Amino acid sequence: MSHPASPNGAALAAAPHAAVEVRGLAKRYGEIEAVRGIDFDVTQGEVFGFLGPNGAGKSTTISMLCTLVRPTGGRASVAGHDVVRERDAVRRNIGLVFQDTTLDGYLTAAQNMRLHAELYGVPREAIRPRMRQVMEMVGLWDRRDSQVNTFSGGMKRRLEIARGLMHSPRVLFLDEPTVGLDPQTRASIWTYIRQLKEAEEITIFLTTHYMDEAENCDRIAIIDKGQIVVLDTPARLKEAVGKDRVQIKTDDDQAAIAALRERFGLSAQIAEGAVTFGVSAGEQFVPRLFAELGLPIRSVSVSRPSLDDVFLLHTGSTIRDAEEHPAVNRQRMMARVMGGR
Image 1 (cartoon, one colour):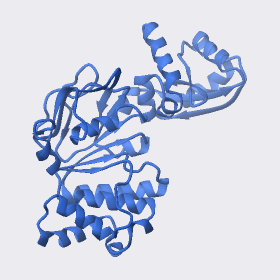
Image 2 (image 1 turned 180 degrees about the vertical axis):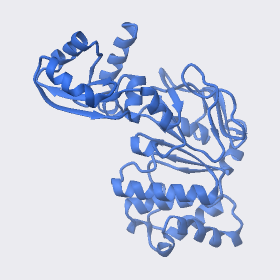
Image 3 (image 1 turned 120 degrees about the horizontal axis):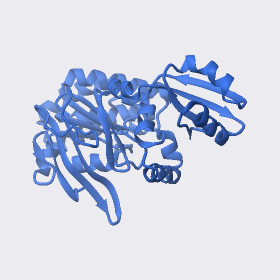
Image 4 (image 1 turned 45 degrees about the vertical axis):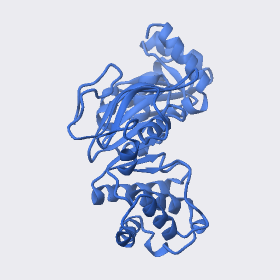
């Protein structure tokens, strides 16, 4: 489902039965604009992702939507309730899994679950059957009487997801749900997330800086420096790139960039330690590249458009580079703006 878009790519018209509606949402900390007036909707039952590097504004946005941080501008509603005027109603209708664990390691898994249920007013007679239901979803019912300190990182994350479902929320927020986990554990967490979405019929709003994770979303909003730069399905975003990514390594990368511009009319840049550019039919272009570049090429790789290419297209850097070299990328973006690109 697509919706009319604003100039920054975010959906503007309220989606039918929207679980989350955001208009001009902003957060400033002194001189720092963490979130700069963003607009988007999340449809009921959707898996919606915020994709961006650390420091892009993902967690700040979730904190505002979950009523943990008060916006300095704009408005937002979750499950039909305003995040400023109806904080208690919002909190009753959401589940939240933070980046850092908030479990009590000295309690058992069941004790953590029961404490959460009591805080949210789950009827006493409903606690045990609900606990069994959600813990079986994440494969932890047989460990319910184990102390949480004995759990692995992946088990703790699964338990937190189950805990977030105890009070049957309408929207589940997952802030970097697999950060710090190994690839195999991350994949298993996503298996559980897909299963619980089908079983619970809830809306899932997650943040991530992992490209493969974003592929699991129905739609993603790419956020950078507090602004949404584009919003659509992963497939449409990749289709819009329209070119293969070619990366080459040479003994003189700046000379290679100049040669690509002069001989092929291609605009290239350094990304992830290699000269990077986009071209149609990349594999067919490679023989011509070796023949006509005029510089020795030490290695070459060609890949189909990915979400990292989408991020590169819209921000001027890859997520990896944005996280490793934030100052360099700010300068690069300024150069692009000043150059009229």
